[in-house]
Image 1 (tube, helix red, strand yellow):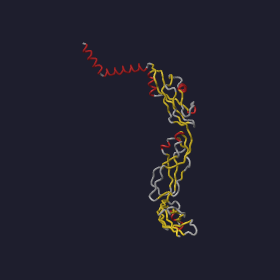
Image 2 (cartoon, rainbow, N blue to C red):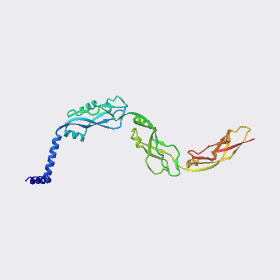
Image 3 (cartoon, rainbow, N blue to C red):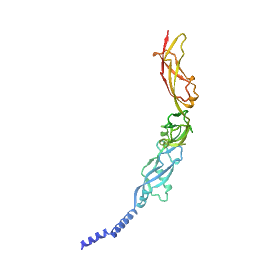
Image 4 (cartoon, one colour):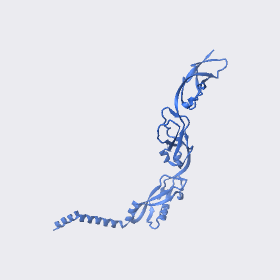
Length: 314
């Protein structure tokens, strides 16, 4: 008889009715357990709202553990859905700017103001919390580009880059802004340039995220022209020669190479180009050659040879 009872019991537990019975029993036990009172730790989220020019938030939310005595249902709910309290930065009793902290009593008072009718928190676990707030400063920067525009082969800038604004202002952490010297922008990618342009540039992400900027995009413009290589042979003229001294130079001419925009070369007068050497006695017997009269925006200047040798003829 007992064997038959055990067999029937196993069959019952393995049946659908048995499974439903076990589930129902588990639900009843869980409800009974959660209806009892417990003392536990639950999180409370404090939302920080920046309304002060003296500080900058490095995080907008602080989660602080609090001791609460309540039913299991309430504790479970608060752990899944933490309660939130808004804190205005301008109202916080911050005494040390370098180390902004709040005492737990202040947090408890703020919490009770919001949830006065159902407050079951006895205290916050830490005596004080360090706020994610840093001292703020305002600083101005000159804009700069991370890379120059891409030009088609043979084309170059013929004037300095022009920015839509000369100064960019940032408001943020003193420690971060003190490390920045320029507001660096990057150009929006596009086709290689062969004519005058006006392009949009945006502040580098790493810099933009470091502070609050009055603008994160500017316009960059410039003049462009095709460059041509020029090579000329120019006689060297000796200046500052003492009277009654006969000085000879070798070589008597140098080759000058440079590149210049076509617009400059059209108005270029080769006869205005001159090579001079300032006479002074040197141990090496050589003098440097100086070039004047180059076209506007000339680049890649080279002189061959860069020096000439002088001989004093008695």
